[in-house]
Amino acid sequence: MGYSLWNDRIVADNEVVVDKEDRGYQFGDGVYEVVKVYNGQAFTLEEHVERFYASADKIHITIPYTKDKLYTLLHQLIEANEINTGHIYFQITRGASPRNHIFPGDDVLPVLTGFAKENARPVENFEKGVRAIFDEDIRWLRCDIKSLNLLGAVLSKQKAHEHGAYEAILHRGEVITEGSSSNIYGIKDGVLYTHPADNLILNGITRQVILKCAAEINMPVKEEAMTKEQLLTMDEVIVSSTTSEVTPVIEIEDRVIGDGTPGEWTRKLQAQFETKIPTPIQQA
Ligand SMILES: *Cc1c(COP(=O)(O)O)cnc(C)c1O
Image (cartoon, rainbow, N blue to C red; front, side, top):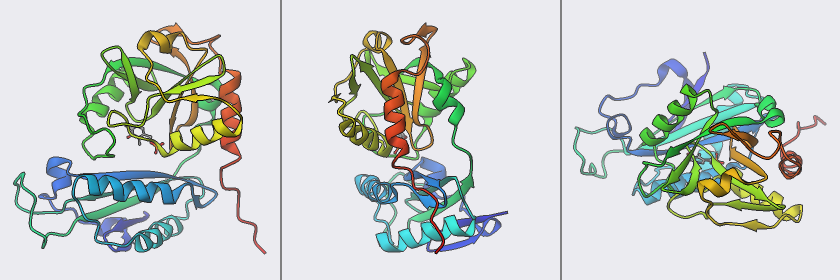
């Protein structure tokens, strides 16, 4: 058994009690984050915490803790669970109160919960690439919020799973938006294309790191939406997320991308991404 984050403290997993009238449980009324841990160190933690507060703000939840308090709790969560390589998950809901769509009063405190998990990086995917399917993007128009409401994503990911695919690439009509839990990129003639960070996608922290990596290797970036047909004729396709990092897509709906192996620009981005991963802390 491990340790969980529960409001303002770290407790044994079995001590966490969630109210059946928690609005996260009844309405998906909350927001969340997933942060990768490499060699015991949280990667891009500040960016994730900033986005957490921003997502909460967009749905009018005021997080009742300072960012410093949250940093302390998240570091404690990683240490208590002795995570080397894995991830932490945390979420906040609008709190527990008798079921009613209307927000509860200020006396109802938001509920913060989180856990940590050890798990290896999916290196085989990085090296061999993965398959994807297309699925219509039926989600709402505020995909910029990392909301607990994940029904659209769940249905698409399940469809991918049933087709033996790693990810569902979502499209609104002909236009590619993002993956069900990832961002999508195409590479053509050495130029990196990805949907602009507007209300139709979640602006991934990994996406932001990848755009930085591209600049560092002098790879031009165009934040422009692609159509399904354009994506299929790209030289290379990538999906990214905190846990997927830079994962090559080698097949979409039985259409082979490029020569069906991870391409040279993908490998360059992977190598550049690798330089940013926290290395083990040397003991003095
Ligand atoms: C979390 C998420 C991503 C990836 O964001 P990262 O910060 O890179 O993990 C992309 N799309 C959706 C819909 C997501 O929920």
